Length: 171
Ligand code: FEO
Image (cartoon, rainbow, N blue to C red; front, side, top):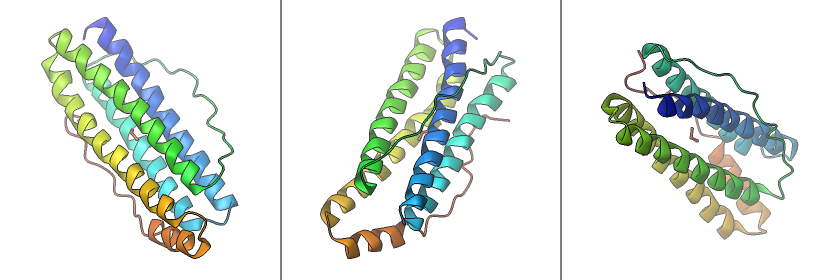
């Protein structure tokens, strides 16, 4: 694998683990603030990010590429409310989308068609990741300061069940 692409792929594993850590911190904040449904949703998101990291790790193993294990940044945060949590989620996902798009651009630039194909799952996944955050921002904006509406949204968030994604080309 081209050295620039290999290094960027390795760094993406760290970014996915940071994402996992961020959503685990958010799950914790939600739980501490009486929002058990939102905590469940964020915990599922944490599991999803672990799967994203593992997918790239496994792909690097398949390609016999080195992986660097850098420290994961502290994700701790004190969010204003659940709307703020989801706004920060969207901002983070937009950052990840840029990072994934950059990976795909490098793969294309260095003619690594296999890596480019592998990355397409992540490109598509980011559309869903941003879309989910946007949907909850819209609903929470509608709820505004209405506690009953907030608790109704929390109930909806409680129904999320994590299903491990099947990421192509990882075996
Ligand atoms: Fe791994 Fe939320 O994207």
